[in-house]
Amino acid sequence: MSEPDVRERPPLAGPGAPARNVLFVCSNGGHLAQLLALQPWYRHQRRTWVTFDQPDAVSRLQDESVVFAHHPTTRNVPNLLRNAVLAWRTLRRVRPDLLVSSGAGVAVPFFVLGRLLGIPTVYIEVLDRVNSRTLTGRLVGPFTTSFLVQWEAQLRLYPKGTVLGRLL
Image (spheres, one colour):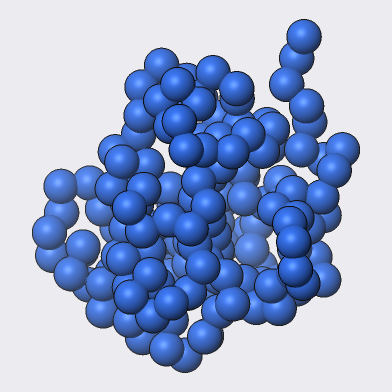
C-alpha cells in the first residue's frame, strides 16, 4: 500500500485558523521542490521565501517575495553567522505567523531565532531519508513546533513526528 499523496488533502491543516503570513526557508533544488508542492495550501497566504540565489530558485520563485541566503552552508561557519544575521533581520521585517522548512542548513538559524521570538515552526523531513536522520532534522528538532515526516517508516527515526504524506 502506498503512502497517501499530500495533494489529496490540505497539508499542514490543523485546529485554528491558518497562518496569514508564512516564511518558507529552504535550500534550492529538491528542498525547494518539496515546499513548492504545498502550493494548494499556501496559495492564498502571504508568503516570503528564503533560499539561495541559484537559477532554479530564481526561475521557480520569480513571482514571489524572496530573500537570498548565503551559501554554501555545509561546514561554513562564516555563512552560518551571515545567515543568523539574515534570519534576525528577516524575521523582524517579515514578522511571520509561521516558519516552514524542509531543510537544509539554512533553516537552522531561522528555527533557533524563530523559536526565541515565539514563532511556530514546522519542519518537514525530506522524502528520500528513510534509513537515517538528516543533520538538519537533528539540529532543528529541539526548535520545532511540528515535525512532519513523509513516510510512516520515518517515525522510527522521529517518534514524535507526524506523518504528512509524500509531497512529491
